[in-house]
Image (tube, rainbow, N blue to C red):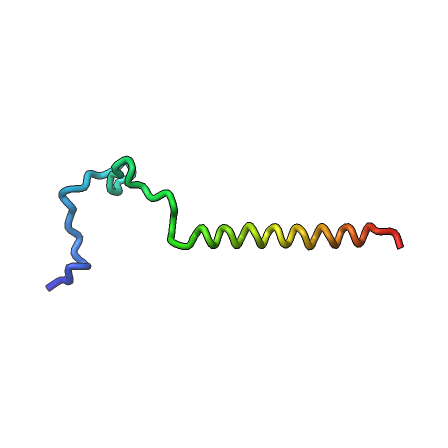
Amino acid sequence: MTSPLLRREPIDDVEPGPGGGPKKTPGTESEAGAPGSHVVNLFAVLLCLLIAFVLNQGMRNAARPR
């Protein structure tokens, strides 16, 4: 006996899409991505801004006449 998770039976109510996967109904696509991805993106932007600020300060200090 095969586990129901391992059986490969076609799903009758889903039409195949252009790539062979299930056809998506307009309005059902997920725009947000994975949960928490906005937090990760915000952290990445803040980290890039911090690095840019630190590098900018280093360049200013290096260019300052002594």
